[in-house]
Length: 223
Image 1 (cartoon, rainbow, N blue to C red):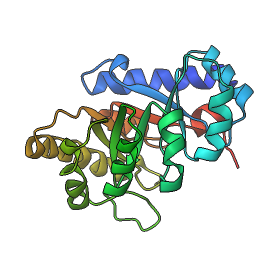
Image 2: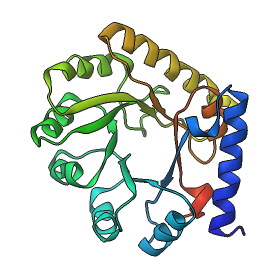
Image 3: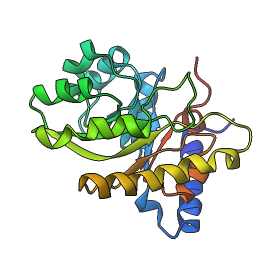
């Protein structure tokens, strides 16, 4: 079993190699350590090994960690958003990756804190996955320019788990195409593609991912 430090180095090496294959450098891809069900001391250890960005799925769990964590880390909300938890999201997180409906966007804006947001798409149509269809996201984007504190920066998706990541390459490629289409249609300059996890992040990077969300490959299996 690899140590935490070794696991981080292995992931970074794979990010570097995949970035080079896509004509970029590793500096073009942000590594987000997914810390769902990871205890605070282990997160601090990952921070000491150079991880600066962390992703959490559940506000209640994240709140305890973030409030106890030293300054310097950047926190990303990557899980499904419940409207009654939005008041905490604006205080705790720097980025929100999982916007999939107008209601969430409007409530976020009301709290008056500048937020970088990504819009979550469900490209595969899997019922078990959160996220909106491309057409539904267009309805959300129609509201963006009327809001004061929302900065739309990109798109996020979660591909189905498969044994061969080549089987989901089409999803990542389609995400890149949709980002271009939405920027053109709405006059935006969104650049971020948050896509790729432990099982498929190399393929995601090859297709243009700018952020990868890695949990298991860094922290091991969690329950």
